[in-house]
Image (cartoon, rainbow, N blue to C red; front, side, top):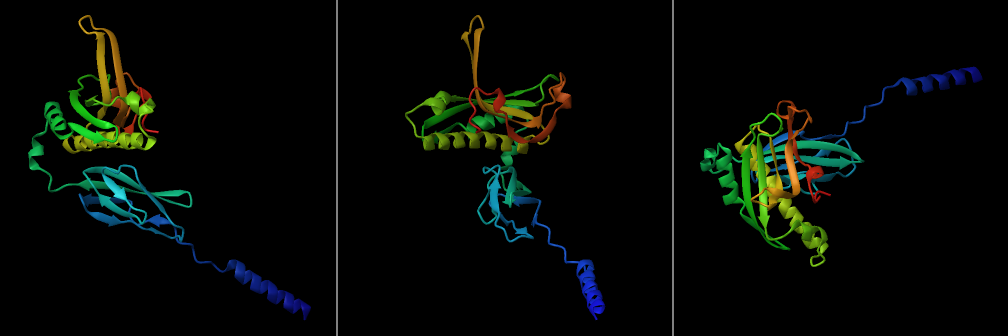
Length: 261
């Protein structure tokens, strides 16, 4: 009798071990790519888990996302929406287009056209630290030594980056808000650039250069901050041929002030 009971128990255990269990649903995001018109919305979801997701946009000037995964298209360009669940990240690349944009912009085909456009569109901003006026310069690269097609310089008048970094006359909150406004300007310039010149590479940012003795061209000085590019530089002597287009990224290693932290 004991032998029969032992065999029965062994049989039941064998069934439990060999019976396939239903596979757990994989955690995934509802969309990995999406194209939206300006002002359109998209609700992203995470399935396969009951854990709550934390949502973030890497380019709020193009698309924002709220705590529930609702994406809102802001302006033309590309943004990556990231959901973090249990320390794992799930992304959706959102491309924002504007079918109703001003058709007169189609006349922007040269670096001079783009320079005029920038100077009329982004001439100044008001910040908690005061008004800043801009002068944009766009130069076209003709050398294989440099990786970019266009170099976009934004010179400023008014607030100094030294004040943002060191002044005790402004609160940390005012400084942060000012930095974010300055970042948004450069991201908007980039978004305009890729809309007018798709497939081209650019370097941009805030920069002022001058000679202490301009007649002799002696004593060269420059100040850079919030520099960016949209390519991966190979570092090769023929950088233009070997560099590859990528997404927008800050390049603080060439700057005098790092406001990207």
